[in-house]
Length: 369
Figure 1: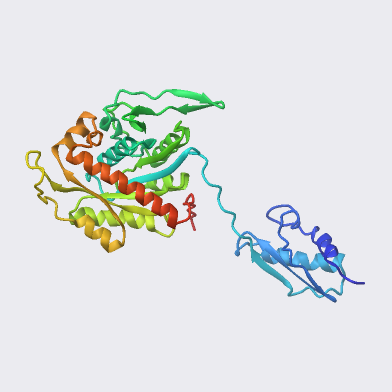
Figure 2 (figure 1 turned 60 degrees about the vertical axis):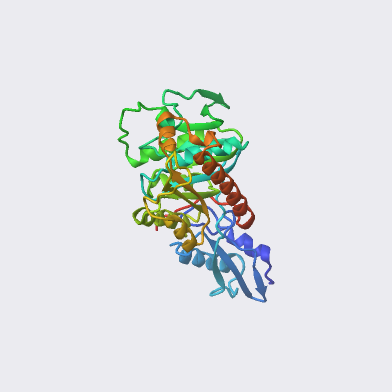
């Protein structure tokens, strides 16, 4: 009696994977590499992982099935090989179908003006004609409502396809969403990590962002569950890291950069922004006083091989604009307005270079061992 592949496949339909309760043919576990040479039969089995505890029992059941349904004299022992199924790529996020670029703005430590930079960058991009959204992901310390003088705003809901979607607040041409719009500004948010991350997911997934050229995400300082939740929820185009020039801030900035560039996260760092680079008195706009040190962030960028996207001076109008909800970026004729305009140009250029030289970012999949 001669052997042939269909006879082998029919026999293997009698082999059931003990852990899955289905035969190995319907599970797609038999590789298309059946070889028959006289009485010698060989083929490969596909398992999800190398340490599958059922490998030995399935191989033994295959030998028994071949002997029973193909032929007792079949030479099969030692000829069944194990392969690992290639991992299927995780489907990309469809939460933001109309958003072209998602840029996270991060800092290693608090107090470096990250939210100020993010807010003014958003306005500067809008001033240049781009459609822009700003998501305040600093769940425990939301500042975007204050930065845009929209503390009293309460986003409306719009039902689309049977689901309530949150309509962002709009100011200075920027679409805004923040947890600050849903809580009393005088109340402290005392939430466990899971509550905060779920709030972030809701702002991302339920926000009615529409079509945007850029969605900027103002992250909380440091590295936390919020950062991990973000990269596991949506693919980021890249990250911008904000720091001040002094060493204590730069040390923490390195940690933020390391997080994004880590093997498990692997989000491109578009560049660094040096905030509070120098103090310039309003009456002497040409003078520069390096209060926090000179070009520390610039030197770090050069050391790490990253672009320095901009240097933002300390000017009284920046503080006043943040307190009054009038971002100075709206006035390009000022020192700060020009600085943020140049920063916007640099970010646009960095995003385009990133798109040209790197493949699209994937949603991060972090597994526990």
